[in-house]
Image 1 (tube, helix red, strand yellow):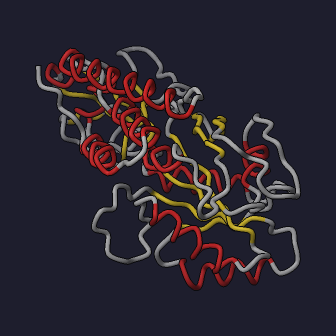
Image 2: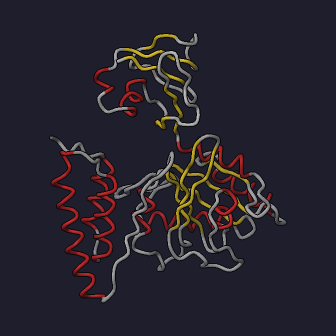
Image 3: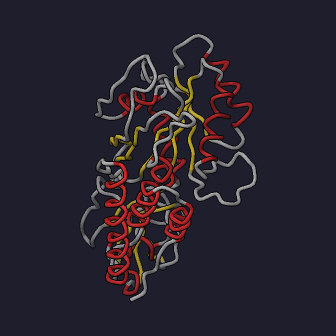
Length: 323
């Protein structure tokens, strides 16, 4: 059975070849494992990668005398979004305000030392946010670049009162050093990841914030999606959530059986542009081949209209699959 590895796997493999330390190699191998689809065709390769990780872990233990901590965070919910920013930008406060998590929040930098996941509700879905250590040159943990490259999107938090344009330039440069592009130009040879991005101008409750956000909009508004919030006062957070959803480029599709109502609290999550056949495969891997037609409620001309397998779905559509 063929492995059918996605393009992201080969990007991680390239990162493994470029890694210099055992810890960096382990991080790349774990990224490859996390990306690899799970089926019989990948069993041998999966075992081989685990063997490499075990060998490198043993080598790292002998040299460093310390146990390695894995920083692969499994994706949960509709998507995974990594939250990044410079020290004291307000990342942890923002996450605390939109999730049920309780990260350490303080008015001094470096309160986040590791990666912490939390779930952000948006309407009837949950989006996973990951709080990360502040971006500081020469202080980037070995596991952070692969974690950011694995994420579906980046949420960049900017303190609107502290030279926001300089902050954006610094964040962009540090991401570039990790071989991550956010679409602000430059030679992209060797770039491994081009994630979707939302820039969040934080601390809208402070003097000068509106001028700082206007500067961000004037400089980056045509290339990046921006949001204006106060994490402390919980201002603009609902609009920010909606923009996260929009930036991710995903849709919610609901299924129903004949004669029954759909469960509107349990959507299938698909990327924009997905078809009825893609939705069928998401329900069950065998349904794509067996699918004869579907009935559609939502974006069709009429409710219950019959559509073919190549019909492109829209957010909120309801489908009834006939196999």
